Length: 114
Length: 114
Image 1 (cartoon, chains in turn blue, orange):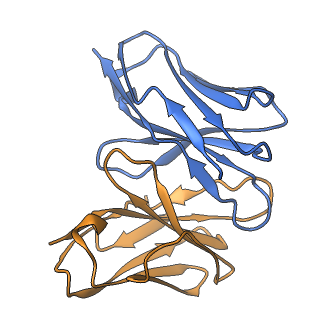
Image 2 (cartoon, one colour):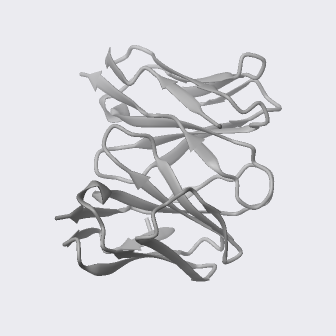
């Protein structure tokens, strides 16, 4: 069945360093890949997404890359700050029809040490 | 944030109780979702409603019963739950336009079954 694998499960970096989280997906028909950030006790919030017609998208300190051939995509956070500490979830979707079912990865707990 | 609201925010219930979770979205979306979030597990999709019709039921036990009376409201009726059902229940909504659906989450209901 459809599956999204996310690594690493935990990541600790020093403030100012970069952080990279990687996901692989199994459904080759997937064409929409969002990333959500969930701070402790809060709801998941979309931080960036990418569609299959582009290979890279950037928004200030965060960027996402997509390799459709290899079926993997990655989140890159540069110049990390303590407020980046949270759980990050990747997801994949076929993005067609009215349901847009998202398959989520297991999550990565990012800790940014001051 | 008032886009997607959920009540109650916390709920403690016994295994013989009947309770309901409520979700309301103020974004004009036409699809709504129930997710279960347990510790150290990915977000698990439970139900999807599109245009008030249930389009997905991910093998959820019958002790969970969803209801979508209109496109803005979604309920999850609970009865005879088990302790392992304790989790954060998240509602989400999206605008299904067939081009990748960004889902917006509510704050969740933290459920504890004793």
